[in-house]
Length: 212
Image (cartoon, rainbow, N blue to C red; front, side, top):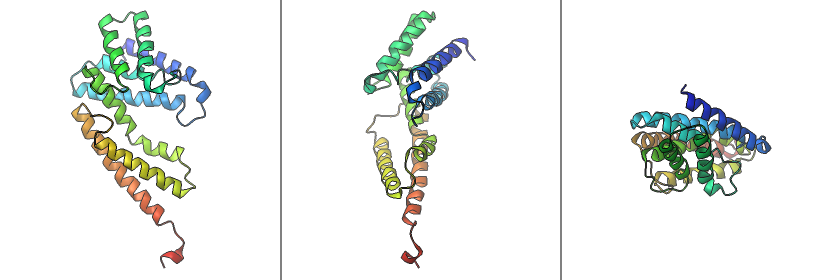
């Protein structure tokens, strides 16, 4: 592995686990946040190769993107805080100034920026979205929802399917890469099939007297 990427990876891992130690028992705790970071990073690598973009810049941007998750007072501004942490680390580690500026901008703009100005920023937004809609979310749903209350499960699934419809309609912003667009459509298709079948099974969870 590239030495710089290795340094950043270790720093981000340690920072997230240390700052999130008071949230270790939560479903969305530091271990999840680190694993989310790893999945986003791999997507950034995939997209960077497809877009013929600088892999090192994209991978490091993805590693840093949520580093401030447990220290940002305003989640809507965690991109800015993560960019500050990233910039300080990279400058102290001797990264070139233009590299630091590119990565910091991508990290900062992954939250709330509707028109990112660089390919690195666009790839990071797409990579983050791909993990947000990835198949792993099916497992996380089972972990966070009270499966013993079928009405609650039904409500949560219906709410998520509505969310998917909004995402598909571009309400949360566009996908910038062709690979990102294709994968999101694939994910949404899988969700609709899986959750549609689960809703059907919930509907059929009845005493025999209701259907015999």
